[in-house]
Length: 353
Image 1 (cartoon, rainbow, N blue to C red):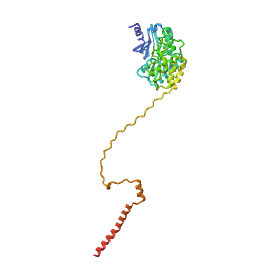
Image 2: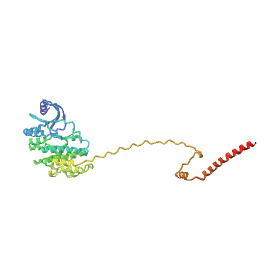
Image 3: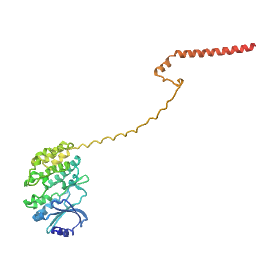
Image 4: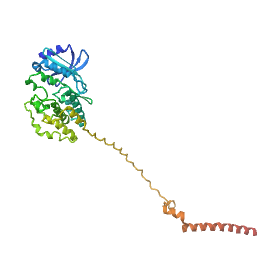
């Protein structure tokens, strides 16, 4: 066990109950812990001994206090910070969720979700920049998603470290593949627009599952992939052209060509609408095939066959009398006359006898 591990355990045990260690602590170690004083679950971040050895602690304390003043729905705040001998740490609330880096590890994020995340990040940046705080390390590991809510973590921490470290150590602060050209080059005049550039990189990673400039390093401030930057989003047919254009503006090499402020970025994002795919109507149920019953042959005598009466027949029956029907009437009338006469003749004949 190293001195760093031993000193951390003994010192922090008086303040926190350590539950487990989290992976991915780029500038030190990260733990899930319970604050003994408040019984609150927190994420505890310890700076590495290498950083601490070069740290101006007065400057770090000043900057971390500024970061702790940030209060915004999309910013995960710094709750507390401390130091003891060769140990420096800060604590943030524990959030049930996951980083965007984990979210897009297996599949890209839908465009509508990307737009929502970018709006939340831009809102956080607009607020923080207004308070004079530049993040300087926006990346998918520092953006958490809890349900549909997005939170930016480590706000002000990179600035606190940069203000507290010698120039030779500053190049180790941040994520090179997210750094704007002026940040990679160590330009002291780099301003809030480096965060806007990082938002463009974040958007590409969410849409395509990887940073467009994954091979960037501080020693190569102009990545070769910039020569193909116009093709970065060309393979995303569902991406609105207005959003594609805005992302590419954020990725401009010249700061003046990017959105001037996070507020401008947010306003442009608010003007972009994503058409929700139409829900196809439910298919009509396929009717069960109907089996017609077999017809048995039926024999009819000629007398049983009655032809259908057509409209013409009806007209004939109403307006005219057919010759056949005339003969029938005459025969019936004759019988009516003849039968009484015959009956009377027979009766007279019997009387005369």
